[in-house]
Length: 311
Image (tube, rainbow, N blue to C red):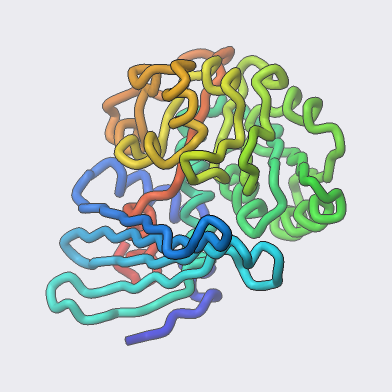
């Protein structure tokens, strides 16, 4: 069995290649994704084990991730995990890889894929809320599907926002990237707003969002956490990465459903529907669209197949 390093992952998972592989994967519906989430700690010391698995005719892929709340107070990452790849026919392990780079890249690529259906084709300005390891990937992936010429980066720490802006600039020197202090104004001028935070309460408010904006929510992935307020969700056409899991797992969707702010039939579709042609994407230049994701085992499967050369 081969231990696959991060540089190999970077080489295999360039954003354009991964986006198109995801499009094909969601369109064909021939994988079998499952997942399990269990709390293994206590209320005072939250520890979560998250296992996602998917398989098709060639490989079986299992990702096991731990989320350890107390790590937020230290230098140890909050999210840690591994992706294991098995040959489907023989069951032989083909490789194992740290989950971090795979997860960041497939998450960003899935959002960019959704934006290819939901953002205006001429979207040029992106506002990014969040300064974690995922944040630069979000900007770079969206720039692979839309003509992004400027990225605004907002974070609770201006120093971290400036550092994130610098990381994006080094990878995309043609894009103007800046850290911003005025979040409402940065949202108002954006064609795409992407949130990648660990906030439990809304950081994005519908009152700030201009007509025609596409909103991408990737940070909150528990039923009690959300990044956007009710006004954002109620005023938009809403799409998900996977209707089967995101409705229950994501507070951005579960909480508005529970309060009656939206109904189940207000959710237009998911990536399976968009890529398979069952639903259409953006209809008018003036509408607001929202894409909410919590991550799918299919995306891990597609990324893993690229890593081992099967896509």
